[in-house]
Structure formats: C-alpha cells, structure tokens
Length: 93
Image (cartoon, rainbow, N blue to C red; front, top):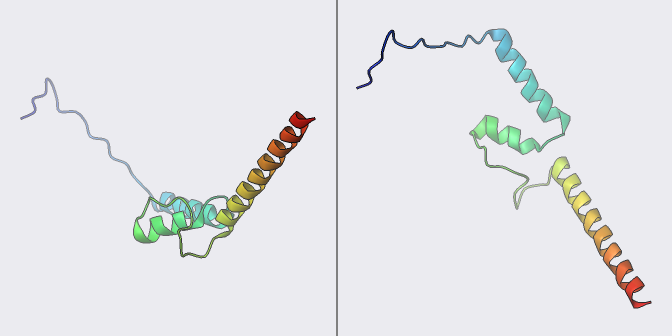
C-alpha cells in the first residue's frame, strides 16, 4: 500500500488534437518520402510495429538508401587500399 503525506499527486493528462495527429502523420510521410533514412524502417514500424530494422535484409531488393550506403562504403575501402599501397611504395624507395 502506498501512503501519501498530503493530497494525492495530481495526474497530468495530455490532450492530442486531430491537428496534432495530422501533423505527426505528415511528418512520418515526409520522413519516408525524403529518402534521407532507411525506408523499410518506417514501413515496418507502421505496418508491423517492428523497430529492430537497420537496413535491407538478405533476400530483399536493396533500397536506394542502402544502395548508396554500400556504394560509399566500397568507395571508402578502395581509397583506403590505394592509400596503403602508396605508403608501401614510398617506404620501399
């Protein structure tokens, strides 16, 4: 049993208007359409309440966001290899 000294603590109530709900829905749509983040995260969260997605999974067609991430990672790896090879050539001189 919980005992309070004095009056019972007040309870806060949030009032969410239809306008607030519409604004939240527009924000979700804007985030999805923008392509700035992984699109399946938004879909899985809305449709399946799934929140553990990071990127496209094996067996799925790769979305634009993940394809760009893969391209950037490959480019970075190639630049790193080129840099290491150049340093090795300079060290042999």
